[in-house]
Image 1 (tube, helix red, strand yellow):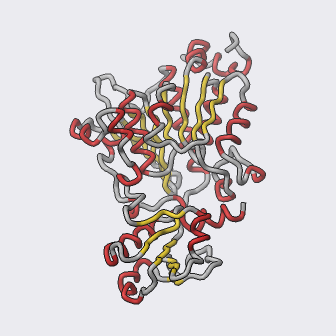
Image 2 (cartoon, helix red, strand yellow):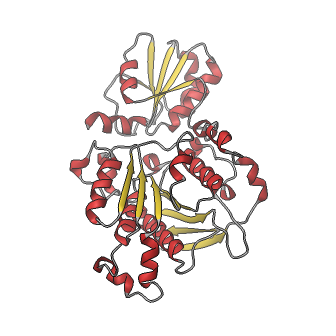
Image 3 (cartoon, one colour):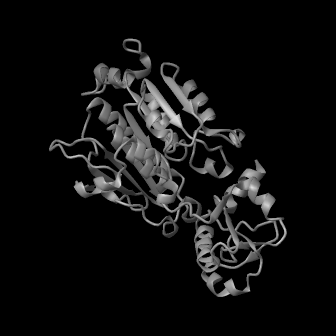
Amino acid sequence: MENHNTRYARHYSLKDFGFESQQKLAEAKVLVIGAGGLGCPVLQYLTAAGVGTIGLADDDVVSLSNLQRQVLYATEDIGRAKAAVAAVKLQQLNHDIIINSFKMLVNSTNALELIADYDIVVDCTDNFAARYLINDACVLLNKPLIFGAVYQYEGQVAVFNVADTKGNTTNYRHLFATPPDPLDVDDCNEAGVLGVLPGIIGTLQATEVIKLLTGTGEVLINKLLTFNILTYNNFVIEIPENKEIAGHIPVDEKAFKATDYNWLCGTSVNGIENLVDEVFMQKINLPDTLVIDVREAYELPKADFVNLNIPLSALSQKIPEISENNIILFCQSGKRSLKAGRLLLDKFGNIKKISHLQGGIIALQENINE
């Protein structure tokens, strides 16, 4: 960074910040995992602030429904990789910094190597499997983790794996030692989210990164901030340290890489095949196949292929009527169809082939239309 770069003039003038803090940002390396609703504002503000090296990891492509909240992207970006689009736009925003872009799904085989090169990790993902994986990797590598989450009109921010003044350190497992059943927790596809909310929470995550790097203000170490945008009610709770949670975290690199976080978090079930878009469209036309929509009859969008609508609430009673040997299930986001698959698996065992549409019909229709 050039001495007293005009780009950062407002930082230089800021009391208790100045050139010294700006230099700390320039020397920092921050990894942002997820370039969606939370990741967009985090990436934009850290780039504008002059964080010297920013890594971004995301394996998704831009979809039309993303644009309501992921303001880094434009309509002409639909169908393009978020990692690639974001890298170009961020570099245009600030040529002074380094942008490392990774079009990849962060998993147990690559997370440790990826995270090791960075000072701070920002979790901008939207599912439990990713959150637990990132948390455990940061604990093993002793990397600070800035956590964020959104749901409908409410968001949360916390700073994990940093010792407070008493020497206490907490992580995501101090909030939830083991994963809740994801089938009992709605995601944004089903519950929805007001578009401005990820912008607010992501900006708060970026703020915590800057504060932690520069030593400015009071960081949310071992604290969880909850913010409601309908009422502007917010509260901060202390996260208590609990030594018992250590047994839930892989003890070393070998154990971490052997952990199946999708299975651990219930997003995959042995005996139920997860079908991606292309495979799903091929298999629904196979002989002796029944495609079941387990949504309620009023839910949109409607499927434009032959299927039988049996809501999840009525499936148990309808099981005796199923004679086909290949059963393919789908719903809005893939959660209820996986739950339906569990019901059928308990009834039929390995007698019938059971599969479901991963990501649900919303993702299917968006990908088909791209």
